[in-house]
Structures are given as C-alpha cells and as structure tokens.
Image (cartoon, rainbow, N blue to C red; front, side, top):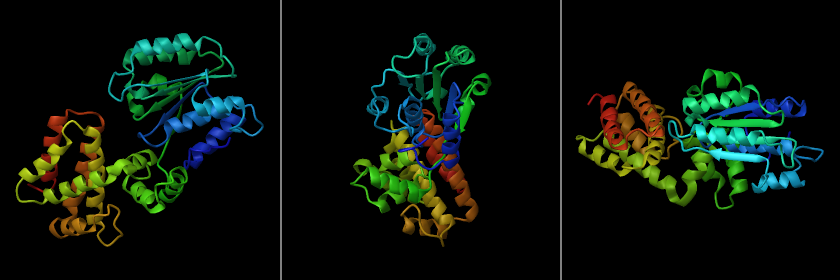
Length: 325
C-alpha cells in the first residue's frame, strides 16, 4: 500500500499495508488523535487502496482512484459531526445503518468515514454497536476521534484502534513546502516546532498572518503574567472572548515561551527569545513548570468548548496562581 499524502507514522503505514495486502482489513477502524494530525487524510488513503483497480495500490489513475481523489465516489459516505458533546445524534447513525445495507454501486466495498465520532451520544454509540457486531461483508467503518476515552468499551472492542501521531518537523516541513509554493521551508519548520509536529494546525496558523497574531497575543500574555497588577493580563485575555480556538492556539504558543524560559540555554522554539529571557530572570524553575502545566489544563478546557467568559477569567487567575500571586 502506497501513501501519497499521509506522512510519518511509519508503524501505522506498515500495519495498514499488511492489512490491505493480506486481505484482512477489519470492518471497523478507529483513528485516534488530535485535530490536524491527518486522520481524515489517512481514512481517504485507506479508501483509495481498497477501491483501486490498478496493480500497485493505489495507482491514483484508475477510474476508482480518480473518483475518490475528486471526492465523488458513490461508495464513500463521509460525515463529520460538530466537535462538541452529544452532537453526533442517533438519527444520523440510523441513516448510516439504512445506507449500509444497500450494496455498493461500483466498488467492492462501501466505506463510511465518520468524523468527530467521539461526539456520539450513548444512544448513537449503542445503535452503531449493533451494526459493528454484524456488519455487511462489504462495509468498512472508519471512526475518526480526538478522544477515544469518550467511546464505549464495547465500540472500542469491535474496532482496530490506531493512534495517529505528530510528524518529525523536518519531514513535515518538506511536505508543507511541496504542497504549498508560497510557504518557505523555514516558516513551515518553525510552525511545526511550535505546534508539536501537527501539520494541520501548523498550516492553519500560517494562513492569513494568523501565526503572527497568535504569537503576539501569546507574547503579551507572557509579559503580563509578570506584570504588577492583574488588570493588564485580564485585558489581554479579553481579546479571546467568543474565540476558544484562538485561545487554545495562544495557550499552546504561550507554553513554548515558558518552555524556552525553562531551557534558556537552548535554541528558542517560540521565536520570543527576549521575553523568555525576562521570564527566566524573574521566575524560578518551579514556577515556570507550573505555568506550563496551567497552559495544558487551560487548553484542555478551551478545546472542549468550556464557557468562554468563565474561561478567560480562569486563564488570568490560574496563570497568576502558578507564580504565587
């Protein structure tokens, strides 16, 4: 099995190659990992290999491959639910069940790519479980989840769970520059270092000057953490009202600034060397570690759409508490 857009994750590539070439592809695959790591890209590449009629799969040129690449293959059912609790309803699962018992139009398989499957409520998961227990012979279900712990144990037990991981930054940068002529290798590598090898998030941050805006906001937060009064920190936090996604990104970058302060003798990852030096001169190692931990906790809340008004106040209080104020 060849992979043409899904990079890194060598063990996953080997596993899927074996399953495809041995004819042992399971009826249910769960791709687990953060948004931006390429779960949907991988799901479509699995579809390519299963549908391809060429000798070396996928050939990318046969009619089956062409339709998958163009997103018009009639035997692929793709649905992504909103990324919030209980947003993937049982009615949608019933629709999938009804469709699954209709034989394929053209291919040997019917493939169901279900995004944000962790958003299924209990009723939806139980309905899906019945289908996974006795699936049609031609059906393959690919569940993309950001949090596999949100899935019922019975659903997990019926699936082959594959944990998708971040890529090595130099490999990711080569891919980004190959696919995007307007992004330089250094820009791509820097963004990947900031976002921990997450290609999707790195690409998003490089669009429309977004990375600069997020970087400036994170830098302002870092400086205001050591300001004498809390007002400036609260004022900076207020920029994120109604925008948890930007807050999550700023907290991720803020953590890299604190990390740079912790490892002040190492090369800067955040690109905010001067701020890191100021933090290192003012804060102990223990306080910087607590700040990193606070960023992780707050980002977890932001990613799960915690109440925004409460969250931005908590950002201010938790960061100040981390340094004993």
